[in-house]
Every structure is written in C-alpha cells, then in structure tokens.
Image (cartoon, rainbow, N blue to C red; front, side, top):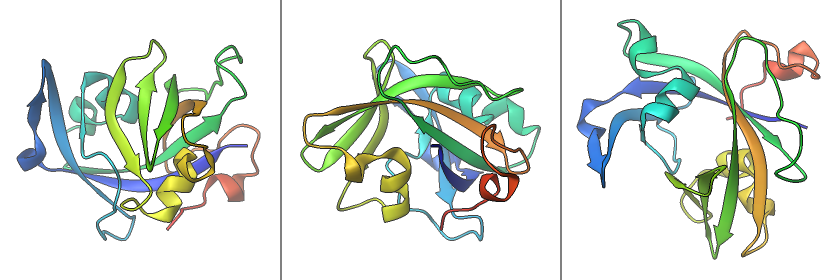
Length: 164
C-alpha cells in the first residue's frame, strides 16, 4: 500500500550548498497551506531534482506542490512499481537508533536523514521510520507526482489525500 505526503517545495537559494563533491539546490519544504514542515532534507542533488520535478523543471516558478509517493517493498528484488508519466526510483531506508537515512539502490547514502525526535509524525509514517526496527532496512520505490495525478491501484479520492 502506498503512502503519500503532499508538500509545497519553495526554492530557497540560501540553502544551496556543496556537500563533499555534490552540488545541492536548496528548498524550503512546507505543508500545502505554506506552514514550514519539519523534515530531514532541504536540498537536492541533480538526481533528486529530476525525481521531484524541481530545478529547471519549475519553469521559472519559485515553488511546486507535489505528492511524494512511497511504495514499501518486501525486498530489493520486487518488481519496480510504475506510475505512467512519472519517474520511480528504488531506495532503502536504514535505521540506526533514532535516525534513518535514505540510500540509493547501490548503497550510496543520500542527504535525506529522518529523526524520530525532530521530524513530524506524518513524515516519519510516510517514510516508514517509526515502524522500522533499529538496524533494519526498508526497501521502497519513491516517486513525485503532480497533485492532480491518480496513483495506480488506489481509489482517486485516496490518491488525492494530503497528509498534514
């Protein structure tokens, strides 16, 4: 069953930075009503920008409302989920103590780190950290879709939900 989080990403150049050898483009994550969102990432590498449809794809706009779709898997070998017209990428979340970090499929860590005592409960549920045991991994497919897109296999009214 997919988990969906609707977020407004506002471009924020003050959050741009260079992390080791990777250039990151900064954004302020907000709830759809504009309130800041407590979440473990505020910048994206070129892969994240493409996955979330940000960066050049904003077409001159400074913000974009998107649905982040998390599709938990039973293992790395599961078939890749498909959402027509959208990028879907495989990641895993690895928990150590009260934190969980997303990793690319090849094991490379991302900057997306979630923390039980910092991030909002709906964010922790979306990524699955609150249900994950210490030392465990959860494989998932992630996608970002337009807010008016239906998610295959879900009734339209549930696909349109905004978690807040």
